[in-house]
Length: 149
Image (cartoon, rainbow, N blue to C red):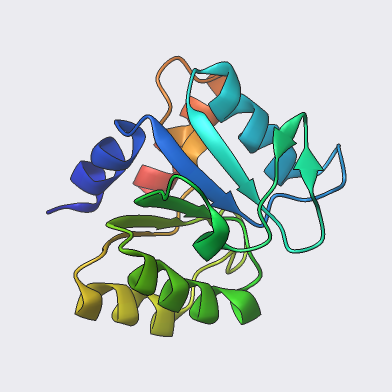
């Protein structure tokens, strides 16, 4: 499966967990979380230091999510990513997206390799805003520039 096919499959899911949603209201992870909610996704926030985010119950880790999810977006620091992909495998997650815009984002080579070895479809980088239908013009421009580079 190509990365674009994995992205389409990921975005076709109606329920997903977003690991690393910040407690800070103006953080980018919150913006992305709100966008998924506004588009009708059943987005489940995960942050070990929060009980609620934007009116949604926030789980401290992936294994506590009920009912379980099989799709996970990572908004984590690379230092956290490797352990959370192991939680994904244990929880039966089928697809993960390791967020990246600038810098490394949530992506680590070890996490990508682990997902591939476990049969988890992985999107190794990219920003979901660039692929959501009807995204703002600047996200579409970012996608175009990214394709050209």
